[in-house]
Image (tube, rainbow, N blue to C red; front, side, top):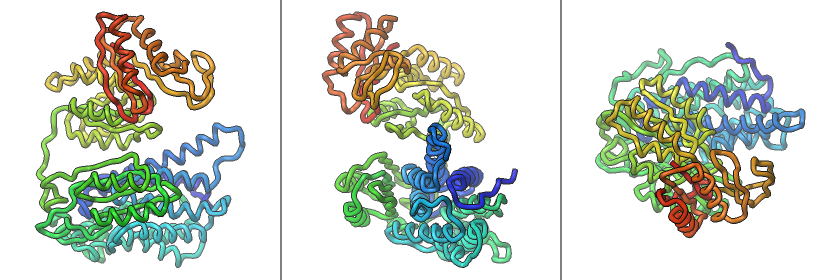
Amino acid sequence: MAQVPQTFFDALAVRTWCGLALETLGRAREEIDAINVYPVADGDTGTNLYLTVESAVAAVEAVFAGHAAGSGPDGPTLADAARAMAHGALIGARGNSGTILAQLLRGMAQVLAADDPAHADGQGLRLALRQAADSARRAVAHPVEGTVLTVASAAADAADDARGDCGTVARAAYDGARAALAATPGQLPVLERAGVVDAGGRGLVAVLGALVETFTGERARAVAGSAYPNPSEGRVDPAADRAPVDGAPDECADSAAAVPGQEGPAFEVIYLLEAEDRAVERLRERLDALGDSLVVVGGDGLWNVHVHVDDAGAAVEAGIEAGRPHRIRITHFGAGDVHTTGAERPPRERAQRAVVAVVPGEGLAGLYTEAGATTVLARPGEPPASGELVQAVRRAHAREVVLLPNDADLRHTAAAAAEQVRTEGIRVALIPTRSAVQGIAALAVHEPDRRFDEDVVSMTSAAGATRYAEVTVAERQSWTMAGICQAGDVLGLIDGDVAVIGSDIAETAETVLDRMLSAGGEMVTLVLGDDVPGTVADHLEGRVREGYLAVDTVVYRGGRQGALLLIGVE
């Protein structure tokens, strides 16, 4: 069905564009991943762009939902939606291209949100596309032509020459980007040898195609991932050597990995950073000396940092010196892979079965990993999107996967992820765990050598037999099942409902534990957050020993897990 076109660039147009961009990248993701030979042939550019836009969509939808829940008749303004789009992309940016796309969206938002206009016309869109291209180029330490930066600049140049409404400007930008994309193999020899266009640029063309559809209601022409998509320009054999590197410069920096015979950086480091502008300038200089592929995007106190380095610890320490880094992601490219040697990575045989689990803190992530699970970290207020779960299932590289969401609010997200990977031929079973302690119980009885159905039934039974609770602090006054709580009160929740309101962590936890054990139990699991002293665990262990002689207790440190304490009784 044709999309109802938007006349002006307003809040609804932002929402429509983001949704269409996500759909378009969803269709093109596998193709973009397949042509990702530069700067690192790790086959994830399409996925990274999809996850970045998915985060932007979630932020925009949250703004619309917030206004719908309010009493006012008006919806969000263009400034509200544009800022949400940029912020969502910033906190969800993945990889080189995703980080650059986040800066492109931020550059557009800076123009669209200026002076809080009701809407923007063709002239406003031209200015937004120019600011996007220029700000993205400034964010890259060492820009190289033939990449997504080239495609973005060409789109802005074409838009500058266009006159008319938003649809006219969007189509001009798309056509300019499409032509620039076709020319990228002539700018980067590694693309020409592989017979492909730049993957990041291909993704940007898809996003601009969604912009055309937003304002015209017509889907833009498809773009081929092979080099020279226009027949008149000739075509490179797609079966040609697809190896990356081999003397090509990095997308964002001159990389040692681009020189035959030399090893490149071993790690990709990405984190969000809360820091002042001056501190970020010093950080850029330090990270530029440590590695390559450096991209730092953002502003107004929040930044997304991306770099390839050999010393991941030093890159994180540099962030700590500059401000407060969080959502830290470190990916090891691996010895002998295409990034470090320029050789093709040997195919890895799929495992028969794997467990993929969402965990709320670094400590539990380590525990689950030791037990053989592939983990997805969910920090407080930052639940993973379905695309992240899909990526984790693929990373597990197994024929059969057991998925543990460990959060009642993630059940639908996990179900969507499971449905998507089933289309890829992976057998997935979703166990509706509502807490990490239920996941621990399920993982404890996991036996990969057992028949899949039997293993799933056993894990589901163990999780279902585990009652769960958490102790947390109330953020504001509210009505609960246990009465009215005030901001700062200590709350004890049993199976998701507030059961105890107190003022002391240890006393509240003891009351919760007593209520849970009154119904029986053989094992108590305690998971302490960073802000809880070990004396609380000692107190609770003593209480169990004294009052419940046949019950064992195990204690784990969960890290920054949101709740002060997680309790499981099985």
